[in-house]
Amino acid sequence: MSAREPRRPGLDRWRRDGWLAAHKWLILRRLAQAGFLAVFLTGPLWGFWITKGSLAASLTFDVLPLTDPLMAVQALLAGHVLEVSGLVGAGLVIAAYALIGGRAFCGWVCPVNVITDFAAWLRTRLGLKEAYPLDRRLRLAILAGLLVGSAVTGTIVWEFVNPVTMLHRGLVYGSLFSAGAALWISIAVLLLDVGVASRAWCGHLCPVGAFYALIGAKGLVRVSAVNRDACDNCMDCFTVCPERQVITPALRGAKNKVGPLILSRDCSNCGRCIDVCAKDVFIFTTRFHDGAGMAAQSPRDGVLQGEKML
Amino acid sequence: MERRQSPPINRRALLSGAFRAACGAGLVAALLAVPARQRAQAVPLRPPGAIDDADFLSACVRCGLCVRDCPYDTLKLAESGDGQPVGTPFFTARTVPCEMCEDIPCVVACPTGALDKTLTDINQAHMGIAVLVGQETCLNFLGLRCDVCYRVCPRIDVAITLERHHNERTGKHALFIPTVHTDKCTGCGKCEKACVLDEAAIKVLPPALAVGVLGAHYRLGWEEKDKAGKSLIDGIIDLPDRMPEAPATMPAPERLPGGGFKEFKP
Image 1 (cartoon, each protein chain N blue to C red):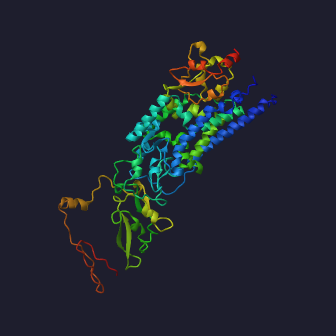
Image 2 (cartoon, rainbow over the protein chains, first blue to last red):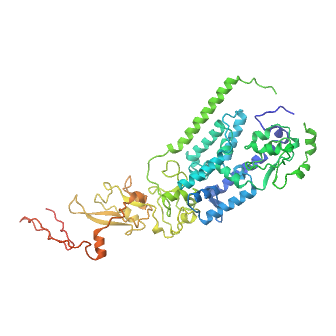
């Protein structure tokens, strides 16, 4: 086994299976994020309208309304009931993420994720140590605060600072490129995550993600540490995971008789643990199936057993 | 693999401390950059059908669907410095005024009700109210017949009329004063856009800035008198008006039937 390089998680997988395999889910996520952006941009760029609006509220092919559910809730608390299309849109989004589960929005749609993933990558490469550990429950406090704030002020308060919608608007309407608020708020998030605290925004502060975590808490799609017996404690999954606390119960749960499914609502279903693991510990599965059957069919099962160090 | 000698811990700590401080300072600077870009400029106007400004921010999710469906690219989403909360729709009359589409697509597109769907007749819109603020520079006030604001008004002779006044400067000409009727003006901004001056003499302002509001207890005596059909106060004796004796060289002022005197120049 080669010497571990803690600043380059996934190197072993890369060396064994190639770069593409070691970045499969990352690439798919970036494609998804680009795709969700592209549907908004075909209209203004080429006159072919797929989706109008922004992540706050949109209309696809002039029939499908989608609304940010947190926005709808804030409006409601502020004393305003959205139009039927807006409410239907919020309902559809809630239903979709409740079904899919996890913080799929955060990992697969949200444009801020690209910034914070980059910040985390930079921190890992620079080997920056955590200086100001934040409490991951802060985001729930902020979520509660903005809901109360909306009710008290009678406005959708989070929109005054929301980097998610600001950045998306900045990309879709172009203000990012004219030094608008989107640019400054994105720089702020980047500097926060790089220089102040690791995964500070998405992993600790963002109430939009916290809200999606609550919606998707019982969703279908889950990562399972199905081959956890093969784990050699290389820590690569913990290094790349934006919510590392979700891994431990599943990966180290055998002795506590806890199943291998990652059931924490904080998991964003990003699949990076699957990418970087050289021992093929993780797979995507559903909450009703911990993947045990699939594991036996893994072509490398024999190799894994042979390599097993413990 | 050969490992490089790791630097002394204090230097590394120093470097990462400096890096953190720089990031922290940059973070604060980036956050302050948003309000710092605020600058004074023309008052931004809301799209047609926008509900009261106090309620608007409880409803508008800043999605931009109204902007997308505006066929004339009149509507924009506010940026920091535009004078409205970031992401909310607005337009600047002097740049691109509202073309007052009959089907009002921006209102139809709104998924939140921030633009009120009960507005179906664009003539009933109140995006703002035109006010002729530049009374010292307006060409019509100077006695010329510019009339451009009047001519371009989609509600010509309803929302804006030319009122004839005496030209005191020449003593013998008329002024045709563009006069906005606040309850009829939609605030589309065509007049402000068309004003030929370097800085528009007529500007569309949000209603709250454009009109005065009488105290609820105010009564206009002459209207009350008309309503009642008689004076509200009994027993007022209307004494004859005593006029100064006209000098012999000058004709006596001629009384008008409605009261007052026909204008004369000594």
